[in-house]
Amino acid sequence: MVATEAIDGCFEYNDPSSASTQAGRDHLGWGAPRSGAGLWRSAPTRSGDLRPQVPRIRSAALRHDRPSRRAWTPELARKEAKRLLGLVANGKDPADEKAKARLQAADTLLVIADQYLRNAKQRLKPRTYSEIERYLLASWKPLHPVSVFQITRRHISARIAEIASAHGSVSAARARTALSSMFNWAIREGLDIAANPVLGTNRPAQPGSRERVLTETELSAIWRACGDDDYGRIVRLLLLTAQRRDEVGSLQWAELDTGLELWTLPAARTKNHREHLLPLVPAALALLPPRRVGRDFLFGDGPRRSGDPHRGFSGWSKSKAALDARIAEAAGEPLPHWTVHDLRRSASTLMADKLGVLPHIVEAILNHVSGHRAGVAGVYNRARYATEMREALQRWAWHVEVLSTHKLGKAAA
Image (cartoon, rainbow, N blue to C red; front, side, top):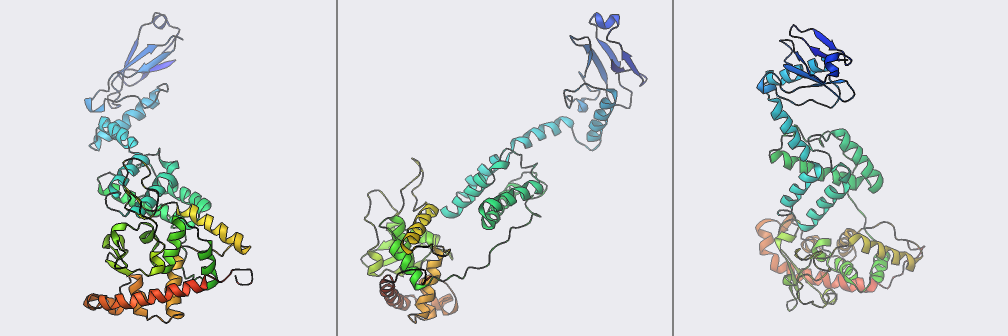
């Protein structure tokens, strides 16, 4: 039996076996005056059961579809009516709330991430953008179908733990930062998200500042294992020049003056946003590849797809793994963990400790701004530093040439 509500608020139960039901006639009932339920219509189904239908809620502001396909009961009807009346009492239109819910459901993590990345691509350096893109599109892929309005701290914490387990705490921390930046941007763009759900989640433990300085024997093993390809040339240039990975990997012909043996790094490509003039010694110039027609970058394979902008070298991880494998094969054992940034730190340390290069000259080579390189003094001393930098880099190149004859073995490791 299905209930319909009478005018006085009592319920009448209509027997599906009654003559009126069998004749296929509808049964009408009214909600109680305070129920807000309005006119009810109970139509018989093929099986003879009565299915309640709600053609209209009494108030225009309360027009609303049933919350589900389940059979109505008087108790469910009362609860739904009270819920809708509560929305109206709070100044909300149930129809507007439903439309808002539909819009919010469409704003999935993938949709908002794509919008954020289009904005970020215009203002971030290529490498930074590439890393953020990878974290948002790959690391957070399991949450892509979820609306950003429904993502909770629990979702994020669980996924961070999975990333840390699979890829390490550093990747997890960076993925967390990328997601937090996206949510902050979305809120500033006007998305009515109550709060950034990343805030309040535990930050994965970060390793301390790296202090690894490669030994001369290790540097020799790395140098000897470098192939005559883009990555091999880049690694050797990193050691000879003590510059940063992407500064060398994205080196452009327009930055080089081979006649003056000078590399001018524009401010847009340096970490401290200061132009950097670096002398190039013959050993470094000898590593430059032949110029290719239509290519602005010295290294790399060009755009990934037709129409994409030109770019420098990519594939760092795969190339590093191949280099490590060659080192291990030559030495009979792998080199203790190292990164390409260790080459920069090692070069500067050995220049100072082994060759006696003065600290401010080392800082000038590294494009660090501190001490008497800061302010106006740094500008006036630039020309004098260029000469001293060239002398220091030449002495370092000779030293690298000598140490490249060292062999790595189990005793030396």
